[in-house]
Amino acid sequence: MNEALPTSPERRRYFRIEDEIVLVYRTIPPEEVPDPERFPSQFVDRFALTSTLEYLSRESQVPLRLIQRDYPEVAKYLEVLERKLNVLAQALMISTNPLTDQPTHKVNLSASGIAFDAEQFLAAGQVLELKMIVPPALVGILTFGRVVYCCEQESGRYRIGVDFLALRDQDREFLIRHVVKRQLARLREQRQAPSDRT
Image: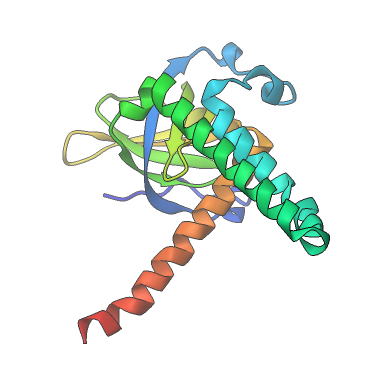
């Protein structure tokens, strides 16, 4: 059973994909959800380091292109430094975060919510703290969401749909790009599949 999250005008703005990520969640009281305006500054920690660096890399693309036009050797050096920082951030994530040892889970993912299978029932309206690690860049995302449905499946497990309540803008932008990249990659695979069979 592959059930998508309920649709709404806001939700339809975002593409959805089937993906495999590390996902850990826990139920929390609604009052523990941070103020969305303070959320970015409250949770800049080692878990979100790769996400923050990925965002800063995007921010630097325009000035880097300007430097590349006039000083190509300097631009090449800066690109190497950026790659080194990304490698260090991923190494730090792997060495200090126990979540990287967790198995991945199949999820239905978008920039506005997530659906996944679980062993335990979660009532609609419950609030969750969710930690996600998205391969291959090992981008760590901390977010909060509300359960919008929980449907029992034939297997005895539950399909749970969650709307994100608090998500850093940079993490939402990353999820949008990640989903689009995965969709494009799958379209390429589908186009190549017939020629592979001949």
